[in-house]
Length: 81
Image 1 (tube, rainbow, N blue to C red):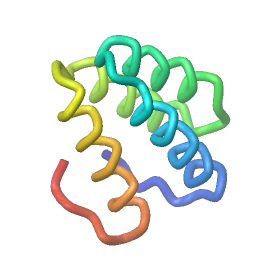
Image 2 (spheres, rainbow, N blue to C red):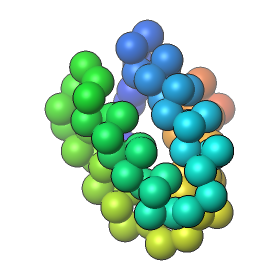
Image 3 (cartoon, rainbow, N blue to C red):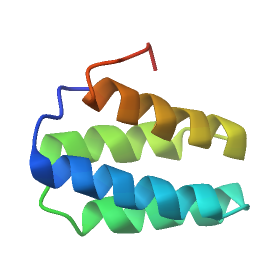
Image 4 (cartoon, rainbow, N blue to C red):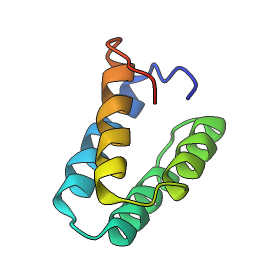
């Protein structure tokens, strides 16, 4: 994941994480993530990276972990994702 350092990204990632964590079905959660990210002003290359990463995820728990790790990475407390 590239470095995501913008106010727009922070609020967008927080918003989408809350939405995705509330959805139980992995495919519905992934669709919500992709729909939300694609509608934002996040840099195109960052969008592509995030969408590709999420599309490869198979389980809801892994998707939730990806989002949590992405938030940590953005806050500078990153872990390997």
